Image (tube, rainbow, N blue to C red; front, side):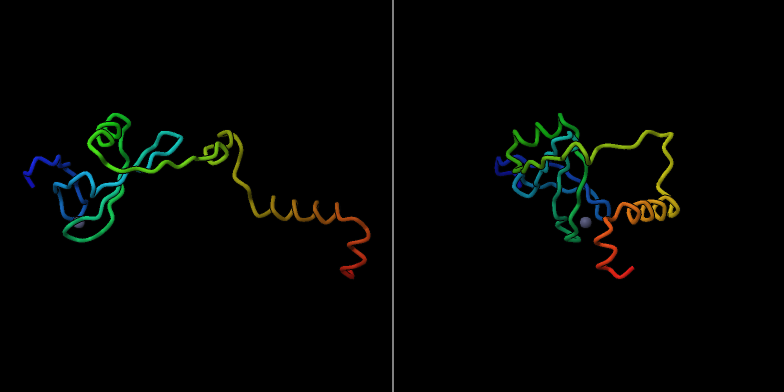
Length: 113
Ligand SMILES: [Zn+2]
């Protein structure tokens, strides 16, 4: 693979290090900054996906690795405060009962309940 085309060292968890041409890799650039690169291992054919730091990502893009961009909505990254307990089955049942109490009288008649 020494024809002047740049090559990139990658590591398959099962097979170890190997050199690939930039066209054998693909980067997904996420709007929240956690980018990944992926390739198919030449030995086991598994797809390997690994996080790629921003600086390395820029170098790979300069080397000609193709990429796509994915916008991640802010809601996906939201987390409840640490002091808020997880939702329990009792919480769900209580919510269902509250929803039933909010039903308009006309829908109760139609449902026969
Ligand atoms: Zn492999």
